[in-house]
Amino acid sequence: MQIMDVASFRSEYPAWLERAKLALDEKRWKEAFALGYPYPRNEQIPWAPFKKSLPEARLGLLTTAGLYLVLRQTAFDAFHPEGDWGHRLIPLDAPASAFGIAHDHYDHSSALADLNTVFPAGPLRELASAGLVREVLPVAFSISGYCTRADRIAEETAPEAVRFFREGAVDAVLLVPV
Image (cartoon, rainbow, N blue to C red; front, top):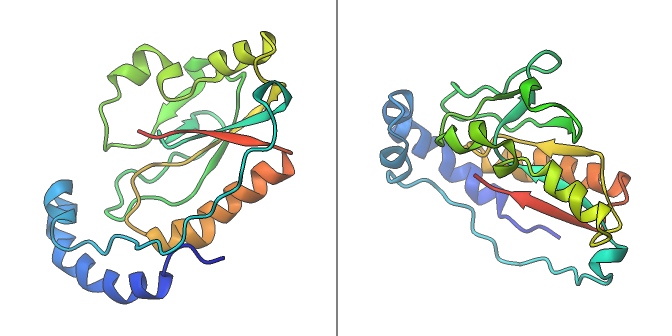
C-alpha cells in the first residue's frame, strides 16, 4: 500500500527547495516552509488493529530527537539544509552521558535535564517490570525529526524502521516526536 504520493512530492520539491534555499541556509525554518513546501498528501491511512492487551505486548521505541551515541555513532547531519533521513540504533541501557543530540530544531533543555522526555527507556522498563507490558525491545530506533526529504523518509527510513521492529517481534511502537 502506498501511503504517500511520492511522485507528486518529487515533482514539486525542487521548485520549493530553490525558493526556500536562502531561508534554509539562514535557519529561518518557518519562513522556508511557508514558501510552499509540498507537504505529503496521504490518500490512505493504514490501519492495523491492536489485537493484544498491553500485558501481552512487546513494545518498541522510536524517537525523533536526533539522539546518537557520541563515542560509537556518527552524529546526524543537523547542519544540512535538507536534514538527515538516516537512523541510529540505540540500546535502551545506554547511560545518559553517552548520548549526543544532533537535531537543531528544538530546545534541548528538557532533554538535557531528563533524557526520558525524548528517550523514555527507564519508564518503559518500569512498565515491563510492573507487568503492564510484556517486555520492551532492548534497542530503540532514533531519527532526526528534521528532514525536508519526505520522499526519502517514505522510501528509506520508514521501511527500515518497519523492518527493524518486525525483526524485533514488536507488537506496538511508542513514537516520541519532538
